[in-house]
Length: 161
Image (tube, rainbow, N blue to C red; front, side, top):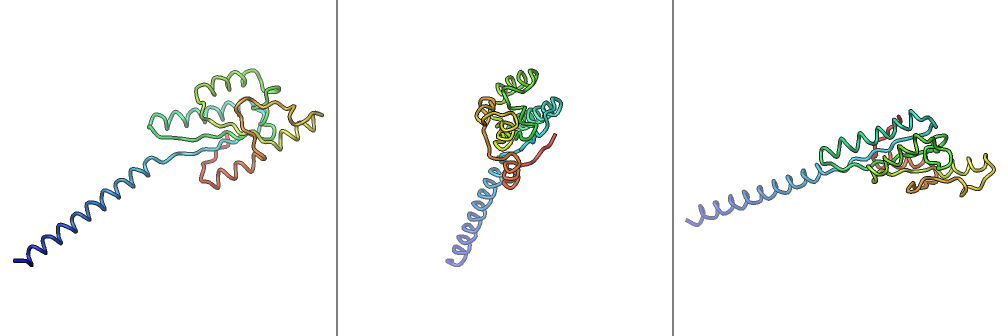
């Protein structure tokens, strides 16, 4: 009589262990579904159409994942002539207005401004680097190209409008 009882007990223990394993696997799969998406958008031209396209891309990505209830991190990296997008003193009025409404509606989008470009622009204009005003809230990065590389190395998707 003790053999059938111990066999049943072993079977129940194995069944319990299997159920726990399934629960853990399900929890792990659920955590994987909560993945945060990442996209880096390059702006390297002082072209209103390209700048608007970059902002449209960012807006569309944010809207898409927002509607799905998923998180997305977006960073727009401006360097070279594209830095005019983030320069207070040289951006076009249309871009100024668009950035104002954009940053109000999508405050979590990060704007990265290339410090190398800023220094080169200052030198070309006979100014100090600090005299090249960058929009409030933009973060300065040592190099826009290097920033894009770093983000891609961290698994970020890369877009060049």
